[in-house]
Image 1 (cartoon, one colour):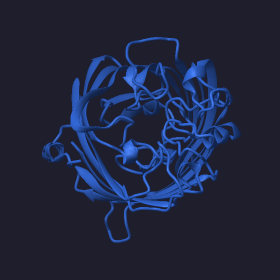
Image 2 (cartoon, rainbow, N blue to C red):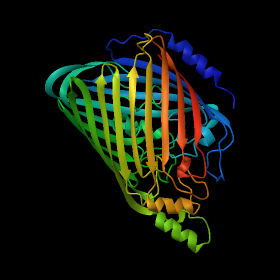
Image 3 (cartoon, one colour):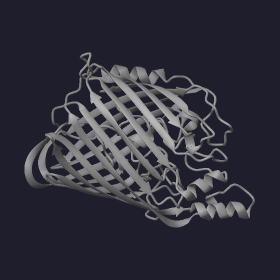
Image 4 (cartoon, rainbow, N blue to C red):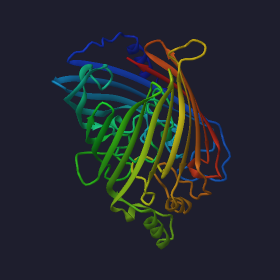
Length: 433
């Protein structure tokens, strides 16, 4: 696959242009990101239809985004994001439950293609309290508003734009790359194949805490495209966020719960169908309207100026097939992020993280019998926890972007002790303008 040099040249040229950040009715931003990722060959006793390739490979993904926003009336704004994407994740985004690139979508293409990932309105209703300045940023107009408020977001956006945020591990364009580190691994949030959906979120913000709730549209079939509006397949998400200071250093604790209602199969029914038909278990024939739920605890804490720690623990029911995100039923991750460097580069950033993912007993039996999930399926399974170690260094390139180096070591990819471990490297170039 050819490196998308045209997109990179456009992103680099735009990144050098100055941008005014004064408050105004209109605001526009852009970004361009290239990730080149690969691995050398690794040991594998066998491979299946959704295995990570045991032979060496290298893939690229590129995206170029333009964010345009306009103030509507007091406290209201509208944003629309246009994007051009190109490229593939490793093995077309298959082979590991904690997939190694958050910049890789479940849909790939050799040629650049346009998308509209976001088109949403936001309304803030002020309730009082201290006036706070809100800095201008992509998808956020500069403003001054009361700390106590109710914020409503409606339209097309990503669930994790609002929920499961973390200052140190959430942005694959700037910090970690692995899916099980940038998000709660078991959070099967509503999303199309690119990670976006239609929905609404309400946030009640007070001085030390926030209560969030959201209702979102799920794919009509697991891991597929969303078109039109419907209410049959839906996800409800609730999150409580507490803000505090520990030894004068800020921190946050978030407690999240979600429940999905859609046409989904249980692993047990898929296994029974496979036995009855002398075939590998198949969820498609036994899907029916059902519910799957889960929870996550998400903590971020500044330890010293420029040094932060984060941790997430999450779980879901484990009896139903994964629907939108990844094949993970239990997950824990932790890590440290450091801004600056001992050699005087204050805008550089380094991060180190660990994650461990697990399958439920029902899911183990399903994959051992040859079942295929969203991201994994080796044909059989010698089960072991999927363990991930990741480290990155982001070299600041002036005010407009960064050059990042990333390394990951994944033991038991797709929970299989018969395959791996695999070492994965990545080069990331990110420009913001």
